[in-house]
Image 1: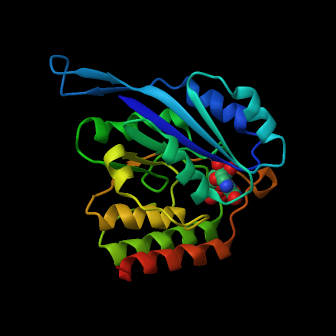
Image 2: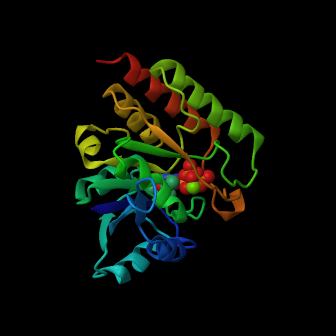
Image 3: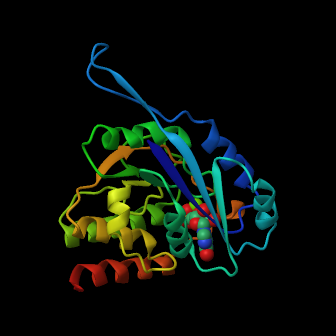
Length: 243
Ligand SMILES: Nc1nc2c(ncn2[C@@H]2O[C@H](COP(=O)(O)OP(=O)(O)OP(=O)(O)O)[C@@H](O)[C@H]2O)c(=O)[nH]1
Ligand SMILES: [Mg+2]
């Protein structure tokens, strides 16, 4: 089986080399079964789909130098379009059996990949989210961000009748079958609610796994703001009541 790691990248020159190193360092091995006699080990081949979203800080030049790496597919947007557009481009080029979204900063930890892949390998789910709010090791950060996250997840749960704990997580993992049923449109921060809404509306139950999270500070490049929350709310409502 092959895992396609889709990485949307916009002005991440400080972290791109290190996140790539970490992504390549993890072994994609999942053990399934109940005890030594039944155990089977599934190892994934790795494909990293790097989508530069019109970076202007040297990230593009860094990625140019990566061209030709056998495990990487590199795509350049001429202009900045937003995370959603970058992920969509990446999904269009991914050849794996399973897709995983990986931001290009260091907030999430690729060592969580095997745990995220486990329910898919065991056939328990077609879509898995890594949750920052299910008891994994987390750097404690901003109160109002946590409230904002909880609120957007609560709205998702009410509208789509589910019990997610972290709709906005970057770690979204899903099979090719799910990917083929998606019709993503949102260019920017509407990405997370849009993909969540579409997965749920197509009848899939999302499996959640606790993950670790080390949020970055604003001085380190944190860019999200409360206004982005309005885009998210609108997207959730639109997909619940449209069509
Ligand atoms: N901010 C931003 N990120 C983009 C864009 N296009 C692609 N990305 C990438 O999308 C991922 C998520 O962006 P982040 O800025 O880390 O979003 P976040 O984690 O919600 O918020 P911060 O880490 O607080 O900025 C990163 O890998 C970015 O490089 C864009 O237009 N704007
Ligand atoms: Mg981030």
